Image 1: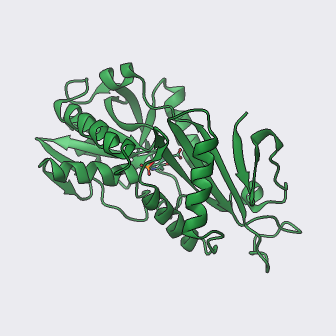
Image 2 (image 1 turned 90 degrees about the horizontal axis):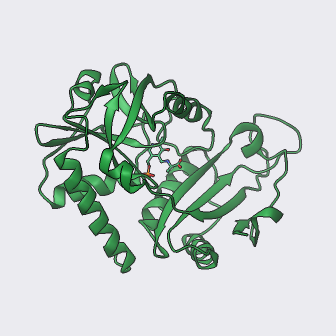
Image 3 (image 1 turned 90 degrees about the vertical axis):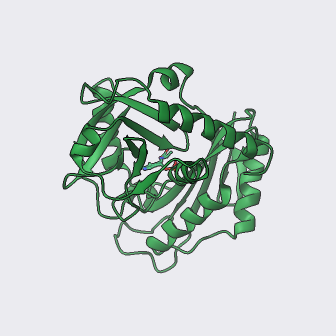
Length: 286
Ligand code: PDD
């Protein structure tokens, strides 16, 4: 039985309940974070809490907890879990309303929820062989930089991949690469790592930042700029990144091989750098 946090209380997940009038339930009016935890050490916690703050600011919801309170909440969830590698989920919604009404309630009582689950990273086989992806037009809203709980479009887009027996959907808006349904996307061309520039059309990934930092640290050339459809389709390598998937090679896109159709040499290097970086986190220096 796993412990969760709900509105000031730690309790078994089975005992946790929220009102059906919660705006998170009725409108998807909330924001969230997913934080990987390795050997009970949270990965880039301050960066995740910083992004949570930016998401809250964007939806005009005051942060219900101080930084210290978030830290102790996360520490308590991590300590109570039975696994060493975990995924901590944090969510804040605009809370319950008396009657269903789109306008913000006059008095807002946010709902704060925290949950810890085992961290499921890609299997050895997925790392070694890579995964397949499909492409789609990005039909989400224009505030994709907000990590909002309203994920209907992302769920529909991810399901396109699942229905095609693939792992992820790579999205384009007006012919420009945005991101995956639940990941950021990188391209390798002629030894240079290309990354889409952060804007309102994609989530500013914590893993994305780590990957670019590692590239700089190890001298891999990078370009952060708009990447067009043709560049993705003629890439030497294509990667996806996220807190739970880490760095993973995409080896086919819409059934056609990406580069040599297997994880490329630059991926191999980045994967190793990323695993090494995780070790520093586990030693408490992340
Ligand atoms: N999703 N883009 C989208 C749309 C995402 O949902 C995610 C992560 C990312 C990668 O962000 P990060 O590196 O900070 O995890 C990019 C999480 C894992 C989820 O919704 O489960």
